[in-house]
Length: 329
Ligand SMILES: NC(=O)c1ccc[n+]([C@@H]2O[C@H](COP(=O)([O-])OP(=O)(O)OC[C@H]3O[C@@H](n4cnc5c(N)ncnc54)[C@H](O)[C@@H]3O)[C@@H](O)[C@H]2O)c1
Ligand SMILES: O=C(O)C[C@H](O)C(=O)O
Image (cartoon, rainbow, N blue to C red; front, side, top):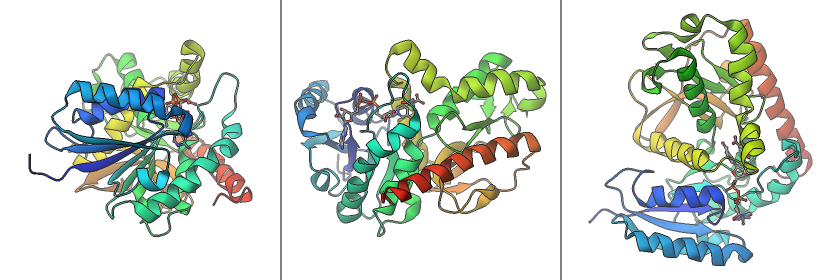
């Protein structure tokens, strides 16, 4: 294989998402079946042993695309030359814990990591923040990386997108492969707004096909928006394999593009579209071409949607103000 390997840095590599993620990256699902990768694992010092164990297992898979694994507890080393950075390591929300409590606990992690990306990553770096609160952690990392183009910092709402696809499929009896143009707006939190007004189910408008506003307001939206909490309640731990799967989907789409006639949801820095204040990292419908995403423009936003988008964006603005007050941005 002559192609230069892509350096993929994963933080929190010894955690439960890390364990579900690394083997899929190494087997070609993140970037494509012909793209060799080098893994850079970042962990806190006490978890380096566990990361070593995972690296041993990766070795034992003899993945043809995996061209090396480095492990470090120093962000300056782990992000050196990184082309893709998956910022997973964070403190997961546990039973009864509010997201707001996570801001301070996690803010300190993402500022130094943003600075290390600024100082050491490759020029084409793409960053996906998974660790919660993902949108605001992405904002913190971005603020610490003034030399990296702002649009390279993204937050994961693809899990919410996939959850919405699955719920809509169950309701309509149409396979997910025939559902297009769903959108998650706003924050990766319980205020997020999964929007089916522009979605298509087997070629028909989804809202019209469902024709059940009560189900939409009282079942679909809360089920999708509170799915993370429901999984914590059921498993006693936050989602891991589905989160890893969504991270793979996010980066694969960002690198390889969206399918014709469809879009995906990504948390990205707002350019002011749809009334979302510029700079907030909010989820939008996007298409991707040649490794660059673009917000889908011109969608009509009805009153039902407007109220819900505004509520989630208000929460994002409050999180931004809170981390600003803490000196994190
Ligand atoms: N955006 C989403 O859709 C989504 C979905 C699920 C989970 N999450 C979030 O992802 C994060 C990780 O979840 P998990 O279940 O893997 O948690 P986990 O506790 O199993 O693993 C987290 C790992 O991060 C490591 N870590 C902590 N601080 C670090 C640092 N400064 N540098 C490097 N590594 C560090 C820990 O040692 C641990 O191994 C959580 O914040 C969780 O809430 C997000
Ligand atoms: O870790 C959480 O708070 C939940 C997670 O973000 C999820 O959506 O599954």
